[in-house]
Image 1 (tube, one colour):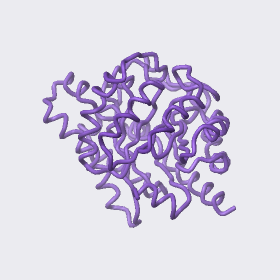
Image 2 (cartoon, rainbow, N blue to C red):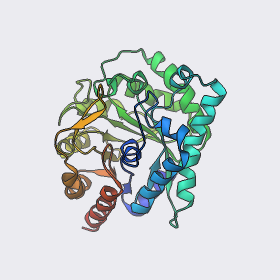
Image 3 (tube, one colour):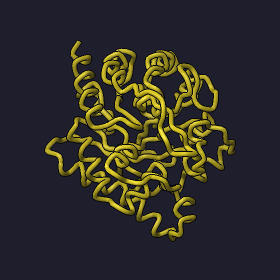
Image 4 (tube, rainbow, N blue to C red):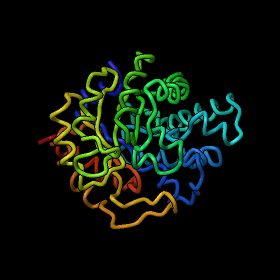
Length: 307
């Protein structure tokens, strides 16, 4: 039994952490770089550790690594050797593990983040999913990074912000090469019915149902107002535990790197119990959420689990 499933069985829910990159930014980090939050790992690993630690202290059961946008092609383009790129990826897991070791609470998990191909493109594609690769090409892109992260023995792989259903299926197939490792897979959704590439969310969830190593499926970096309906749709397509960690509801403009519109953080804090009732068992936050958000989510979900 995986550590993730063991925690689910014992506790009935798992609280994920919140926005990592945007929390780094809130502490003064500059993310304007193709490596995104991976840039901060290179410049200030202590800050990454501090943010991971803050989320654990706030009540997160899972710390997600800063490897979302760390890829071999991306690091090689920045002048790193293959060996140096591998070392950076390993450090992303080590930093989160060091943060967990500082917390006087047992059972904390490490999730190694794997972002979509669109994140490497650094052109907003992760919010659109408008790229087309073959299954073998998706696997060739993701395999080297996944192999390094898997060798670091995280508790779970986090396939995050996946906007393209064909990429999701390729990732599900690729996991068979790492048979001892579970993963969760979360899609980005553009509304209450569709993932970012326009595929119906229910169909996207159904597409990964057949992969046994995908231990949980759901959504992240999606507006909170869409989450309940999306979870209701997902529950009709899968028997897996559902994942929900929305962003603040603000719009991100990748060309300028600016966030706009109105925050929905208050919705997250009050809706988390409803998401639990809709079948979400892995619940947290994404961009622009904070340790305070995670503290409120844990309280709401723990109360809901007792009902």
